[in-house]
Image 1 (cartoon, rainbow, N blue to C red):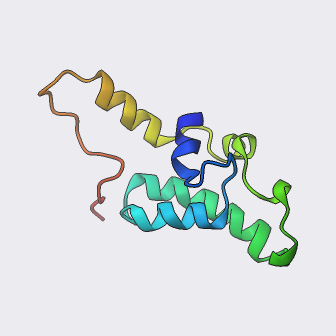
Image 2: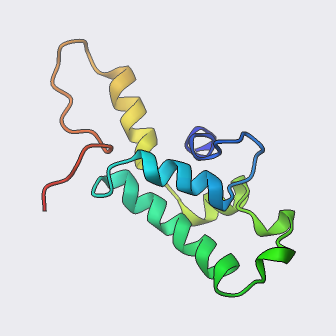
Length: 104
């Protein structure tokens, strides 16, 4: 799960902030499975920081660290995606990606 967390941490400081989440959100297909996972993190961040706190007083404890991430996301679909890609036999159909657009 650390790997999934580090994919979101675009500035590599060990904390997820608003800019980290925006970078990822802008990079993925909004209808993919991974977008649903990201939505949980963004909703937590918005509830904790935007709706409650004055942005001028955001401290280190207000960001999402690995422990808080693990509490929010018990299992990341991105981990399944990586395992499938690494462990599947070459040339064998792997199904759709969690990063691919889902049909409605």
